[in-house]
Amino acid sequence: MKWFSRWEVLALASAFFAGLTAFLGKMGVMNVNSNLATFIRTVVVLVMTACIISWRHQWQWPQGAAGKAWIFLTLSGVATGLSWLCYYRALGLGPVSKVAPIDKLSVAFAVILGILFLGEKLSWQVALGAGLIILGAMVIVFL
Image (cartoon, rainbow, N blue to C red; front, side):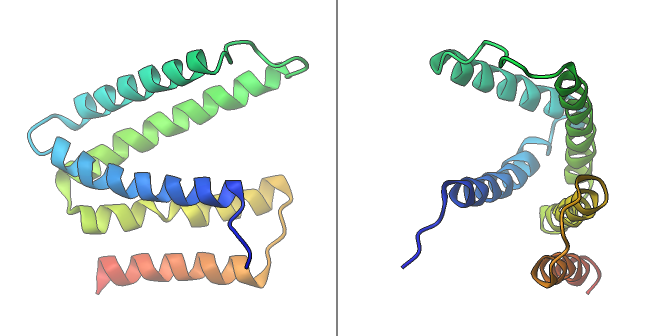
């Protein structure tokens, strides 16, 4: 019997917490401006992450890490912020049962970007899985 590897367990936990985020976010934006809700969420994430880094004594920048890492991490932060702002606004306007599946189309975008810019190979399993995610979102939203 093969057990899940650590990254698979963490990815599944991420999916669970993302689903919980959608539900809790919808509950939170019912009577709160979506931009303020995003700010509150961001502050909580910042404090939680700072606590984890402090607890694990990981405040030092890794030796040999290129300055390029700062650029990509900054751009990733901008993309995250824009994603969260759009997501919370969408949750405020639409049903979580339709907003969350559309948001998960990020998987298909990530696959495409990985292939185009990271040289990742497109296997039939990845193509089928991404296609099913797209099809699933379309079924939920349009049918």
